[in-house]
Amino acid sequence: MNSKDLANRYVAVWNEPDADTRRKAIEELWTEDGVHLLDPPEEIVKRATEIGVTAHLEARGHDELVRRVTRAYDEFVAPGQYEFVPHGEPAALRDLVKLRWAMVPAGGGEALAIGIDLLLLAPDGRILTDYQFVEV
Image (tube, rainbow, N blue to C red; front, side, top):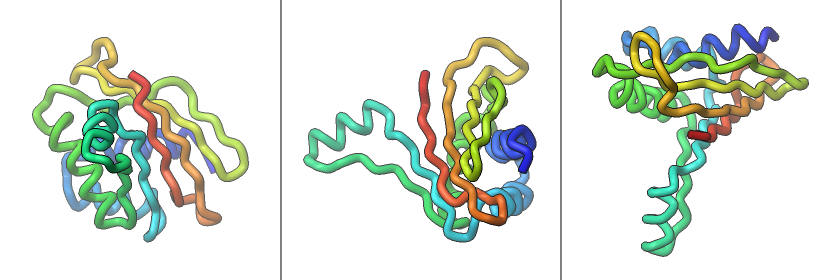
């Protein structure tokens, strides 16, 4: 497994404009029952607490992963304002890959968001569980 290649493919899927290509990339990256868990933003945690529930953001399986990635693409990349880029070097330890990414203005500039993903891989090298934390 090449962690740099995996990190580049992972970040690229969030920028992919073609829906069919995006879905195929998701199917190649995640297992059929793969999970993306997002550490909820503070405003969601606060609102959930106010109504007496715990915030839990999860996409499971290819269909939900496609919706999750497409939603991020539609909100941030499609309007032409931002793009996602690798940030730093990925690291791998057995079946776990740590990668960082940044959301930057299209064409370059200072990062508006930086995130870290911990990817637990299945024996076939695809993502079984993706733990995402937005740091900035």
